[in-house]
Image (cartoon, rainbow, N blue to C red):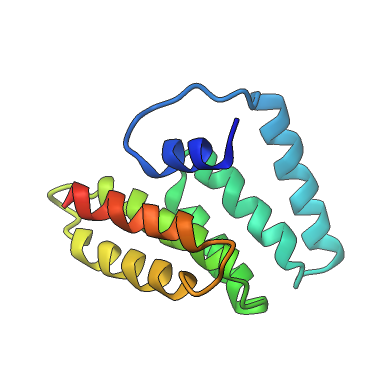
Length: 135
């Protein structure tokens, strides 16, 4: 699957069937947890836990892990995933939880700061366009 197709599926509200099995997610989760036990500042493990939680739609936990990874190492990939997570959190806002605008502001802030990076330029721009269309 092309990276842009995966990005579209992750950033759009469309559902998709993943080829990732529950076993693979559990294995990845356990591996990242053990990496953090060996090195509590392992930003790669934090990023991995963020992606696992994102894939299983636990966006609050994904946000936490992406933020921790970014705090340890200011990598624009971590910031881009944080921006995508804020888009998903904004989509999940209920009438009781009126943080949609706050999440959207965070998404725009994180994604626009990634655009200067050549590798992420196209994907972050696409995410901002999806965000604009949804508004």
